[in-house]
Image (tube, rainbow, N blue to C red; front, side, top):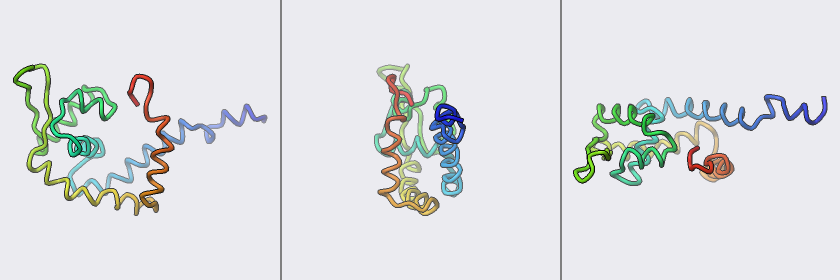
Length: 147
């Protein structure tokens, strides 16, 4: 085999490494988020809302780099859990605002322990996690703004 053939090995593919890592990261988060009653996608929605509340469904979808149709069922489940409320804007009924409830705000305090638990599970400190995250930055966005 020559160098060109080596480039085609599955183990040498960046895309395979990233997809595998993403799947494993979600699995690492699962037991940490379960006691909070959250899935990984729900956790991401709450993280975005804890930064800025309220947000429209389309703003939230853009921030999370997903389509609104993908996000809608996640938000509906969070609403059923009493963590967010969905309301139509009075000045534009086409816009659906997502707002944290008191329960959603309170969950933030419990979630403060999530990052340290994840770092402990993977044996990394905050600087190492930041280095990996920053190293992935070129792959996290496209020219359309979607990941």
